[in-house]
Image (cartoon, rainbow, N blue to C red):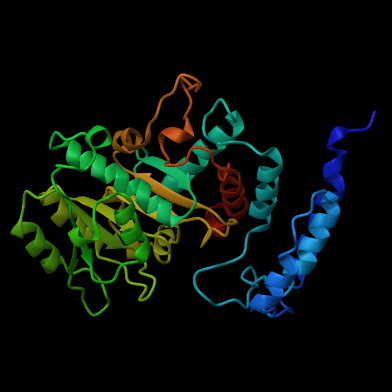
Length: 363
């Protein structure tokens, strides 16, 4: 009897050969695009046929048609932005993730994916110096990590004032003030927009000669309205300047006014894993939430971001959902209770594999 899964072999073999050819020639091929916009449109803009094509033919023609339009961002000669290639173990695990095709939303839909995510989250918290009891989520990138963290912040801040934002929304809710240094990444602003907090609620504060949020400016702003519900945005490795805010100084100031401290560590939170550079994030573990990327310094394939929230119950309360057809685990972690995603890729497999390949010394 013919194996019904043999239909995958030829297309996967073709994809493997083309993948190896791409990776092994990154150092000699042009880094930038060589095909024009019109060329790519002409090649790829085929009429959709009534009849389908053989899978291996589709793959071969796809590789031919995108030639000159693939940026060499996985190679060592690419210097635009904070974009890099994948570790061998992470890339291989990502292939397996696609082959296994798990919906990593519940323990019931993929027990292995749930446990791997649980372990990866524990390892990451330990590496970053984040409290063991903190909640976490693996999301698409730092944009959604900010959104996850600030949703938890919104819940916690308003709950303290007797307002159930998940039930009542923001209409009539106490307005939340957001204090930030004048240099901040646009992904935090987008998260603030998505959550309905409003860009007008952001107060830009002065920074010092290294673009770090000034402690005196933060203290003055907090004291100006000490009872206002407040989120303080801080930076660990700001993208334009590389600045690290002085967490040891800023977080205790925010604590005096019961403000929530969020850390944008998309690039720089990884300094915590380095004996040489961990002084840059001294005190960062006392914050309330942290966001960073896996597809930057950890070199896992796109897409992968990490969100951490010290008040795990606030994170869960801001995300949790129940429906009669869902089967929730009694003793395991159901991933959908911690992320804004429902159908979601089992992106913990590449993270787990990358951490195993590198070990502490490799990081």
